[in-house]
View 1 (cartoon, rainbow, N blue to C red):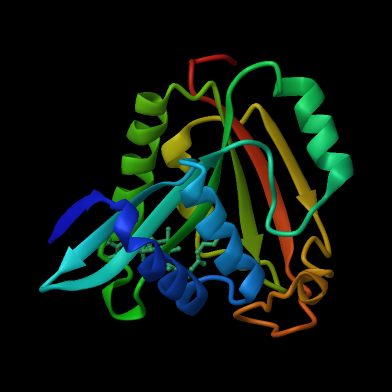
View 2 (view 1 turned 135 degrees about the vertical axis):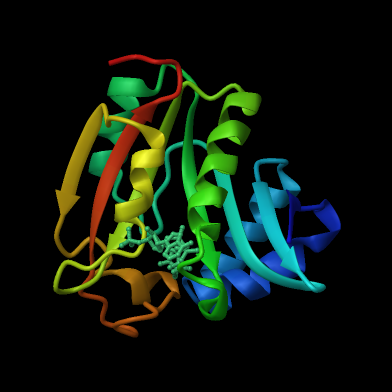
Length: 187
Ligand SMILES: CC(C)(COP(=O)(O)OP(=O)(O)OC[C@H]1O[C@@H](n2cnc3c(N)ncnc32)[C@H](O)[C@@H]1OP(=O)(O)O)[C@@H](O)C(=O)NCCC(=O)NCCS
């Protein structure tokens, strides 16, 4: 198994795989292409026997899957005077899950954020109806949060932005937990 940085010429593969394993839709595809063109896509992939079986990406800025200007403004006021990055996508292909690859990717993202000079990391954790989250149990990799907000119905407008939920389809009932960590040891 090899884990390495994504290359610029692999953007279309990111687009295809992110839509297949995370959130689908033209808006996501356009966003990935735009960030890559602007040099604001930090991404790593896991390769096994020539196949990409895992992926993680992060970007600089304060943005969510679905726009939430009120929360973006609140976070901007609290942390926006320093460099805030956000976790963008993480997935492991179904056959390779529960072997520690997701946790390894989060550690790689942590190191990548330090290398990029991040002051804060903002993560948006997707929580399915009923409360299950695949990612929250792994999130202790990032330490103690500085900020933590749970928002019901966070993805209600997903379909308006040309996306669909892997669990609910067009009418998404999932909630989100927005968590901010200091990358510089601030408590
Ligand atoms: C979230 C996701 C990336 C996790 O990837 P993963 O490779 O399965 O992650 P890990 O193997 O590190 O951890 C998953 C579980 O396996 C356990 N595990 C880790 N290593 C293990 C091992 N060697 N043997 C058995 N179990 C193991 C972990 O403790 C964890 O259990 P928990 O959820 O009860 O805490 C994956 O489920 C996924 O792609 N989901 C779909 C996309 C998604 O939801 N992305 C996040 C959106 S916010």
